[in-house]
Length: 381
Ligand SMILES: *Cc1c(COP(=O)(O)O)cnc(C)c1O
Image 1 (cartoon, rainbow, N blue to C red):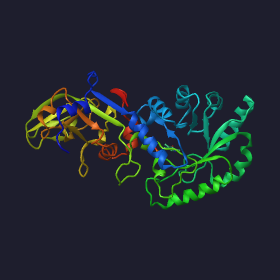
Image 2 (cartoon, rainbow, N blue to C red):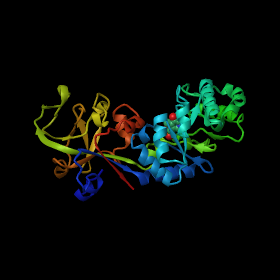
Image 3 (spheres, rainbow, N blue to C red):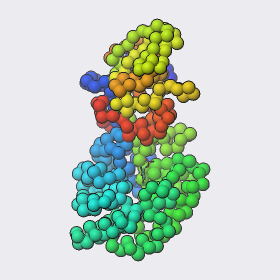
Image 4 (tube, rainbow, N blue to C red):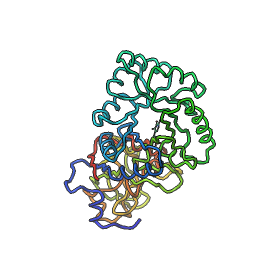
């Protein structure tokens, strides 16, 4: 781990303009673009799109879209109409797919925004075709087939029937979604690829897409015509168990707002669930569960607590994470880094998204998308 100098610490976390907030989320847009380029090169001849749903995985849809469109990304995926309208306002010429499909009654608004729903049922197909009749043209859409998620999409057996009925719209993409792409040895990957090949044979000339980020890394290279990475763009590890091939994008730092000494036996926080095993120094950081730091990142028997980096030292959360604060045991941290006003890393180069997630019994996707709205956000790069 090593001790870093105060200057490095300043560059790493604090901001020269001294934010008034007690937390700063830094989003490195050049790392985001580098991740997209890496995935695009791995996908070879296939086009590389970008999934920007859930406010760009919690890091900011608008900033992510602008950066990726600037780098040459032409196809974006959002979850719903509202996200799609926001994306359209920023990217008049982009192709934007809406993964929810046609929500009841929403076809006219989807069409008005030039969005392409991922249609996964006959009811949606009818509503989309009807909206096209009203507008006097066939509307573009993706056809979503369900090869195992049992969540959204047509049954693969219906591909033949759909190929006939689809004349009422203008399909531009045939897609499906992996169940376990992060597990390269899972037999379900081959099964899904096989079913998807059979489906796409019914739609000659239409682009095909199966891979999320982890799918891009599968040995079968199921890239088809278009890949749809999300998590990896934002720095998440698409290859769990192996080293993360993506660059970290999000860095969350919190400011120490109080530091004090405890006698052995004194407790910290609600219900006093942690008692100092020795005379201890503790620091209170102004980032809590309202900012997205999971309460579950508290130590339990068999699971260590979350940690923060204080002057290069790993310092565990002690007591329960509360709404606005997390308390750290900084007894072993360099004293000058553990004072009021100093900044500590809660997520970033050292504390990976997956690490915090594991300490909270969840997944990195959830940690990112739950990052709060209260701290300062800085977009760099
Ligand atoms: C969220 C999502 C993706 C992106 O998946 P990642 O694992 O984040 O890369 C791709 N396709 C569909 C249908 C999705 O819902």
